[in-house]
Amino acid sequence: MQKRKLGNSGPEVSAIGLGCMGMTFSYTPFPEKKDMIALMAKAVEQGVTFFDTAEVYGPYNNEELVGEALAPYRDKVVIATKFGFNIQDGKMVGDFVEIFDYNLLFLASLMPQKTHFLTHSQEFS
Image (cartoon, rainbow, N blue to C red; front, side, top):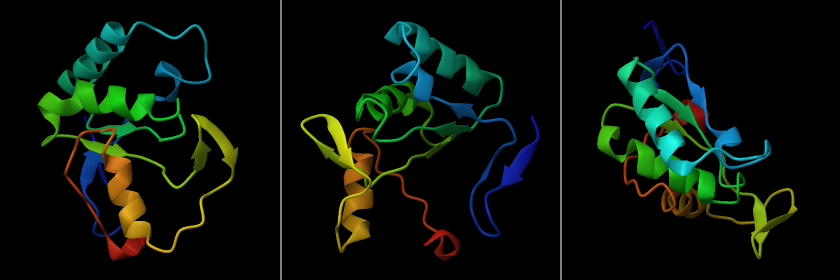
């Protein structure tokens, strides 16, 4: 599998990534959870190290699925997520929340993924 570096100083990831949105959001009917966990495991086995999710996909349950599925491989993969959406009572009610500390918002976005691995680059700040 070919690799790519994210930005100038970011982590190296597989050239082919796996977007996980359709596993829990947008495209119905949704596949079985166990099948999506097996799919992500097979992707890792095939050399995929870059996975994409977002807190708004569900909301939150896509990040939870990705976090659970990739937990055994967490030191080998990179999970990209999008966060900061205005979600209330399980629904997106606006574009983005107004918050002054994006570091706290970023840390909160890691909770559904059950991960503590952070990659931060000034290039992406």
